[in-house]
Image (tube, rainbow, N blue to C red; front, top):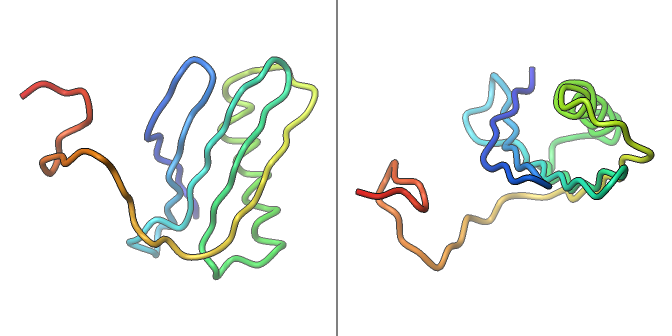
Length: 104
């Protein structure tokens, strides 16, 4: 079972990390951008997903995340990238548990 954890939200976009119950590491990332009545998204998934599983995942994302927002839309465009995560890179160093923009 896939679960989605929101990382970030702006007025025109959202970012989610994808987890599977039996996998401790993230299995993907979903970045979605709202442009008028068109939704553009980028889905990055691990190498283990088949094409059918990716299509099922896109349907789940559409049902569980996008339909919940309640936007009327003309199109939902998804660019899919498949591979392995190399790492997370940032120009800032954060203490463990500290969020960017938080004051300590």
